[in-house]
Length: 193
Image 1 (cartoon, helix red, strand yellow):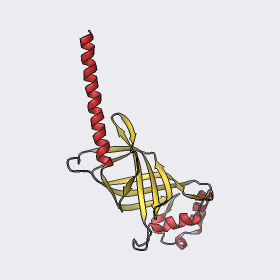
Image 2: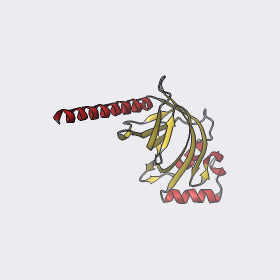
Image 3: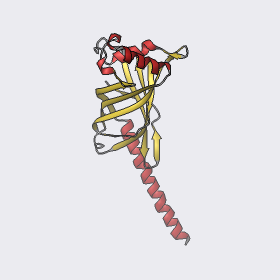
Image 4: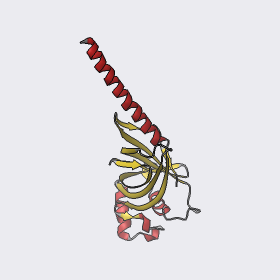
């Protein structure tokens, strides 16, 4: 009886160890992957399409009022469709990763301008992924209040010529679903433009 229990415990330990190794390999593959932003196909903040705005004058009165109201209540929400390329190392092309939660932040000239949290699951694979993200936005505050000029600057930033644009960095910190449960990567990953 003791030998039988010992064999079952050994088999169970080997199964747990194999799941742990696969999980570690999956996490490492996506942690070490290269991420690049290939396209931004849609960016809406509270229903206002920011890809159509090149300057503050491009906002209608109703769009400006809608954004100002949401900004005043600190209730900004974004919906974006991105073309995100994931380049895994050789021999890892068949892996997929389910991101259960995604923390992100946008840095302008290495200073955090806004951040958010995507709570909807997203599946990533090697190659080009079309990802639609919905997230509340939190603008960086100055003197305890978000700055409306920062919001307008960020709204027009997407359409500026890259040579005239300040340095913009998008960073992500995913929580990955694994066979052992969700695991959050320990640090932010830079997305190349």
